[in-house]
Image (cartoon, rainbow, N blue to C red; front, side, top):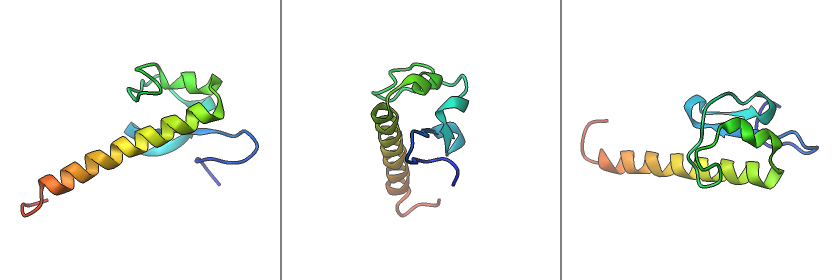
Length: 80
C-alpha cells in the first residue's frame, strides 16, 4: 500500500498540488495555508505528531471538497 495512513507510525500528508498522499519524510519545499500548518513548509509535518498530520489531511481534503462543490454549483446549468 502506498501513501495514506498506515499503522506503525508511517505517516503521509496530502499535497494539494500533487493530489496525492506523500510520506512526510519525502515532503518538499512547498507550503501549506491550512489552519494546522499556517503557511509553514510542508516538511514541518515530518516532525509532527500523527494527530497533527491527520488534522492537516482532513482540513486540506475538506477545503478541496468545498472548492469542487463551489465549482460544480457555479457551473449548474452552464457548460463544464
